[in-house]
Image (cartoon, rainbow, N blue to C red; front, side, top):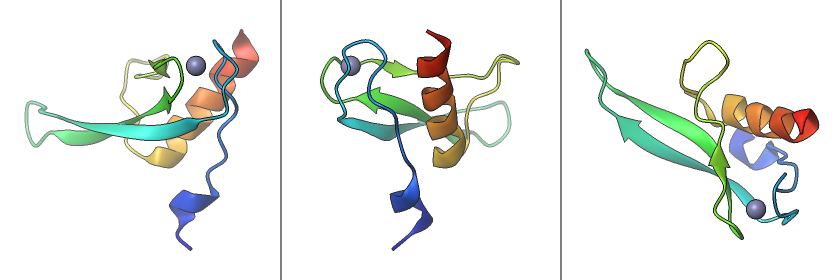
Length: 75
Ligand SMILES: [Zn+2]
């Protein structure tokens, strides 16, 4: 079992579905680019948050999951 399997994601804050996963995309930065991560609802397609309040992408699944869970709490 990897650490990735241990990430817990809250249900979607918009539709309430529990089919939430962590998606990722590769972005090209000015230097090397990076893989960014974000929560994705498998039901309504909601994504995000893509960046933290400071405007930085989430570079790890753990950070993306934490942000997803916090967003639900903020609504
Ligand atoms: Zn949803």
